[in-house]
Length: 192
Length: 193
Image 1 (cartoon, each protein chain N blue to C red):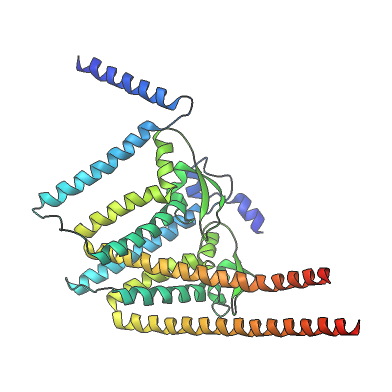
Image 2 (tube, rainbow over the protein chains, first blue to last red; image 1 turned 90 degrees about the vertical axis):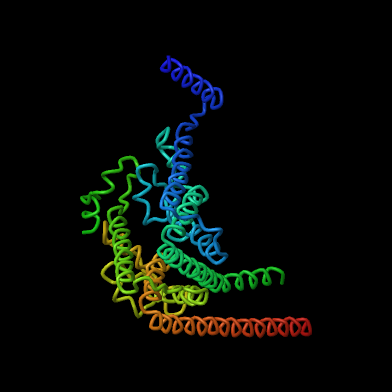
């Protein structure tokens, strides 16, 4: 009885999926698994905290939010784009070539089903960002000092990267200025 | 020699992920680099918790800003400067002078782990991650010493910025002289006609 109900339900799900997707192979099952995992982690965290007789903090301090916000941005990019983290993504992605931002790669998602859904997650800084934000928040409650240290490393690196970008941009401008000057001189010659 | 090596080299990690790429990506080197980074992190945590026994070392906003600026300077110094090139030489090949003063252009050489390390040590953005981590461990374990180092490089950054500004001003004044000369040439030409 229950078996037939469950199989009926799964048939129903398949109908919904095929009517929704049409010919495009959308990894709906993979997305469901990802959402399920995320929510289970959240519930697990809540149970773990309250089970130890502790309470969640009333709120996070502003400096912690700022620190972890910047850290999440930086860590999200590092996980989803950096060359050095590519072995972690390799089972789910295909190498396409170097990308424009320094030390980043272009990769496409491969495979189907859960593999494809997970590949989409780990190649997208915006998508990884939510997981990183959640894990940092749990970390802040369970192990605030370690979490703040990791946050500090990432914020220091983020400031350093931005300054390096500005420094490199100045170099580009400086090397391009003579070209511009020559072009201007040429155009002046033409006008004369 | 290297071509032959590249052809024969089979990256062990790359072999485990068929379909990722046909190119000789140094995945094993990346795994080792990530492993080393995280092992050092674990060691720093161990030292910290053994020594401090509950006393928190606060990394404040000033520390973050000083650390960030210092990390920028130190990472460029390690990844690009000519004076540090002997440290990079086992993993890199000299290509020529860089775009910025006292910097060099170098490319990673070899294949496998050597290439992965070469990528790390020639890339200021990549070295930045290691430098930032060491600065943060320093701030926890030896805050005064680390802050002193940080300030040295903040002052150095300020000096570099002022030098760049100075050179830009020289260029601008040079340009304005050029323009004035051109103008006087044009008026002279007009008068002679």
